[in-house]
Length: 586
Ligand code: OXD
Ligand code: MN
Image (spheres, rainbow, N blue to C red):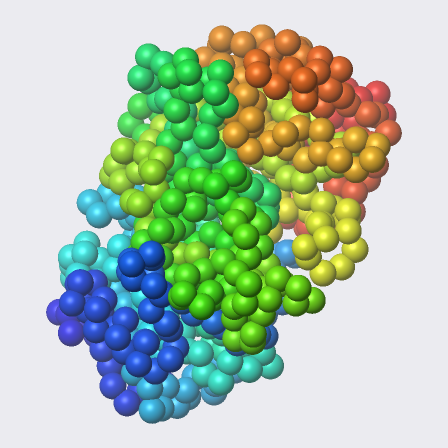
């Protein structure tokens, strides 16, 4: 038990509701990790992997109906419905507390309630904020230990203050009919019930750092964004930082950890990772925008992660990592589709069934995950825990667009950049259920994560632009343009460095650009193709940078369908669209 009265009072109140057999306060110690690991393995909830090959690593399977975030069961519970806005599910706080309160009543009977204090952001950083998560899942505790700074460090940061995010989680009966993820931004509270899957239950991540965080950011004058943060070191040793927002499954972790192509690494360029998913950004004393990664680990998608696609991610997961819903091999190691090594001849799949490479179903769930400590990443930035964060030179937006968006363009100014972010979209892939190639609008990649009315969120971006004396420049990138046969034209992965390099050169005034209808564009010769001239000819670059007026006309129509939902769309957004139309001659 800690000495903070507000914390103790609230924990006791929640224990009265959920009625656990015992309450365990989490301190974050090594002894505690060992004890909880043993406990989790004794009950079969988790399994110790081969400790010679994967020291400190654990394995877990969720129930098959609980493998992803559930947007349809995620609610923003503001007193006024309009404050949740047109893109969020809404429940009134009274209804939500009542409805979920009934489900939480006695939900921890026979179980342990773990009280986890955790810190989002580096210790000793003015950016950081404290949450307490109460949970009946030891899997959650062990994951939170990796994803956050957990235990005493958080309570030391909080001291006697009463201001912390109150998170209550119970697996309850894991029934999807009784599964809800509710956010009460006006009360700094999150209630999650009926799930055991990461994004729904590791409350520090999407629930706090993005949904509650974005609400706090608007009230307090900062920004909580679904962005990776990376640093590019130049041969002279200086480092410039980029934050980038892409919808889920567009390769944020890969970009955050990319390895520059040989032509650049030979000259001395390096890429350093600060974060792969979330950025909290504030205006610094020097008038620039400074960002921290509030998390302490990576909760990455396993399938497709290989020594080819993302060696840094794979190397990060070689110890102290929790694997969820991947294939378990007979020697108690892990495997997944796209790992780049031969599949085990016989193994156990993510559902716990016998599996061989000729089994009709995939062995690992497509959304199977690794939870790995960020400090183990070979390319982790030495600034990643800097209490002041890192200064952001450029913000990138992007998505999967087969045709409309060129490889890269720069917005004319901050307001135009906000419009570019607000009109972000991504085309659905075969990996998700439903029709392939349909644009899903996902402004700033925040559609599922904005904790308030998205019209007000755009207004907040516009306000921030006025408040930041030296704002980052805003760009849009698209790694996913295809040719007539549907093949990707741009090689992607580490080659994306070439585009980031142009972006940073633009920020330093060291690269030219052509002014086009949609923004500043590189001249084809501005994208350095040293070493990939065969794959990416001058003609290919031209294609990648071309703007097709008909596609843009259709794009604007599609933007308007999305905007029609909004009654709080800032006039500036419409103004930007009108200016774009005029520039396109539409
Ligand atoms: C994630 C997501 O898991 O964005 O990071 O879905
Ligand atoms: Mn994400």
